[in-house]
Length: 118
Length: 113
Image (cartoon, rainbow over all chains, first blue to last red; front, side, top):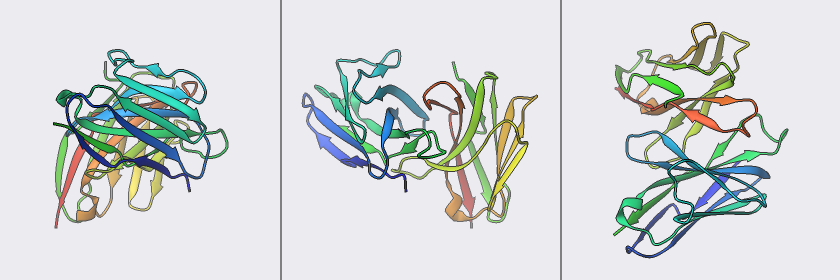
């Protein structure tokens, strides 16, 4: 149980385009979803935290207008990288926090999306 | 500021060896300490976790040792196998922060056959 599906797993696009990444909790409801960015051989860097039906809370240094987060339902959050440039190329990982009592784990992680901007 | 400090950055052991990865923290409000295993191109997966009311937890070949007074915890992998080669992250969570995790920098483990 407690599976988080992230789509797409890999995307390559031209500079200037916008890219949407989906994060779905398949068998539980997620009150909170987290978006991370990970560079090669580095740790996970939290970008933002989103709660269903409310605006996301962004970490310091993360551009809100660049990385748009929508958490429209208890099972789906999306991250849109707007006007992507090569420096946005990275591995993006989402995680979902189950409702209290649904799991004893604080977060369940997706398998990440590798974004390459040409 | 790194809330959780992890060492070593990389570790190489022979098959059957016992790699040990160490983490330290400062914030005494942390109440949950998980370890995650990450393979290339995949998201992190929970390996084992401990709360500060116990000093040791064992699950299969993985053991967490926790020293509350020293604010340190470590992961031991018994009888390590080549399939254990991965990056390991320690993390910590405060009780009132909606599940936010603070990660260490990671340890890249290589187990030679």
